[in-house]
Length: 582
Image 1 (cartoon, one colour):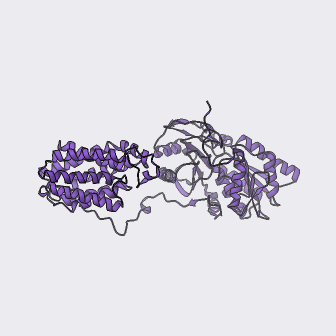
Image 2: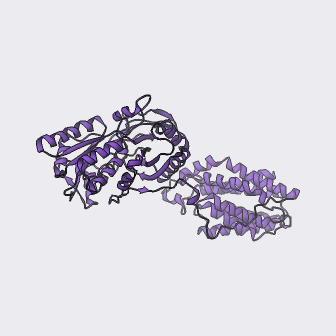
């Protein structure tokens, strides 16, 4: 049974390339499409200067059409998705942009590209008398093992280093260098450009299913930009381990301590900025550990593989005699939005600044000496937060159904922080103040909405309580719970019946008042059991009503019958409290 095609924002799959190029040129007034050729050119190509052309299969955007710019490429020829353009398309583009100074055709080292682009260049020379030279980019180091790896590199695949090559050579052309110089300069820099890819997913051509499968716990190192097989598959690791293996097992064959390098961190398609920034951080840190200086960093979506969730790392070693010129060309400002270059720092100390006003804690970080009864209170509080940590996955699962899936993570983070700071709180003689501090810790570490709400709950509750915990009566705790609940209502701008944590707090608060009115001397054991039972009932009842607040309100009734994580959390910590008094 064939797998269904992956979802894409396209019309007819046969029109994908032509419509994408149309949209590109409609939003970039300096560009034109060469009719019937799937080629993007500059409206006004330079006169009396060498021009540059590159191309290949589509699906790698922004490469190459996104780099058609007066200081980079002057034409980009597009084949079908992952399919080389015909030699006729390439020939037409060369004839269009080649002037008296000649044209350099930059080719990624894939069989289809090499055959069609070299053939077109040959016809341009023989039939049209044009000055045309070619440069084949082979920067993939995935399979370079054993002796004579530098010679074998000429047979490697072309990856994201291709963009570095034509950015440098395009700038040289803009500066007025002649064709022979540009080609020779290209041959020199190619010797020192090395790339390696790693991916955690496949990709899918428009209208088709994924072209290969990786298991949820797998990644592939060394794969090509069309999904070609890499060095091998292995278990997913933390990014620090991935970068370490890429550098130590591969790049250190070509770069050594004391070297200066340019680094390109290329998003193969669907990696988030969070991931790209973490990857870049690791590269900078680990190269520094090898005493290798990164003088320029380029990052972003440069040469993609459709929606592949992966990264290509490209490192260019700077030879002393070429360094100044290479950096001049890389730094030359361009119009395209896809070129993001910086001079990074490999020192982390310099990137941090102390705030003008440091956040003040409501407690001092000195260990407090508690009475025996105070220690019991602290032990009970620790028990509540310790047990909640074990329920992280449970609450994430609840939240994934009706929210964004992070309720448990935030809760566990806040609980861990509370446990780390319990020794600093004076629960016996400064109970009310300790509740304020507890709320502060939760608010600062939980994240999202729940943290501040629990912060206000404890802060408002503390206003009804005395500092010495044993001077507080049942009635004081009742008033405190009610005051805290009303604080949640006010800050959350919510009302009863809107399916929020306030619903559970309100139900418990009402039950609390009723129990105390009927029996002012009720024992904590009975009280907490009845409150926990009330919270469980409230959570169940609330699951049956539609949401009017929070992310659940966008589910159009699908939340009905599902537990609300906020209400369930109230029921859970009250149940743990009841078990302690039991």
